[in-house]
Length: 97
Image (cartoon, rainbow, N blue to C red; front, side):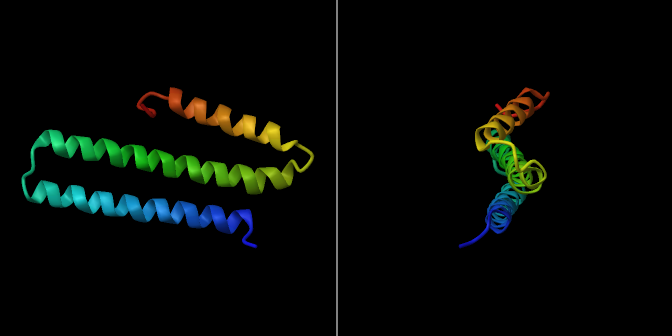
């Protein structure tokens, strides 16, 4: 069975590969002089995808590194910490919509 760290790494890499495809698509839209509104929609989607990748990295860190250091912390407490950090990220200026 695959461990958490490998699973988290694969998830982040998959997210980044999809993001790379989104960015290439946006570049093509600009080259083809697509409407600004369409480009902005795709840029916003890419920004959200990048933020979700950042959250996945943080979640992976919490579930591996921090969990190892705090092995006596109950899983429910770790899940609460993950939710609080996600909420904090959402509250940041320019954060998730």
